[in-house]
Length: 223
Ligand code: SF4
Image (cartoon, rainbow, N blue to C red; front, side, top):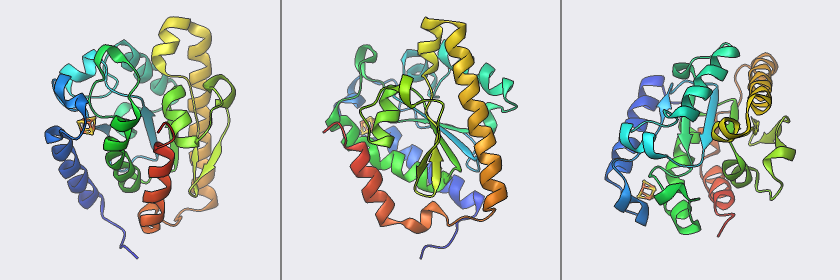
């Protein structure tokens, strides 16, 4: 059994992974990137948000969700009592797909070990998948986000709460913003319930290889 890491050890490991992503040439997405976009936020977060891939602003600034969709996300987080530095934000792929197309199966395959390691190190109580792409990958489902959102899904002793991608809310308007806010409230409430029910759950990092294989299998859904 792997021992539980201290927060500074987790930060150190995440830093090493970010450096590896910065140098990574394992898929064609490295060709068009300005820089890899590894993550933002706290290594001790109870809530981990997962999007699809970096866009133009993210590619230039090296941080996830910093364009208009990111500003909306920050505002919605604030409305449920959270700030960006209290959550952990990452994407399925770390380099910007050209013209913001969906990542391809071989790109997901090449990049998935970064996301698996992020999940194991952060070990969040709740994973919030944002948009169809991340939701279908993690939940291994073909059901669209409109029908999956607003619910909690057990996942490796933790919980996945899917919601719309903030970019979709920018296109659709305030009604979708309300739904994302409601899903964030559900995530916060679920975190509080999990803390009360089991203050010291088995760490994801202890699950080791089994999690690695299972998540890898789920992330290979589009193969
Ligand atoms: Fe490497 Fe992932 Fe970037 Fe592809 S998307 S080059 S696998 S870091």
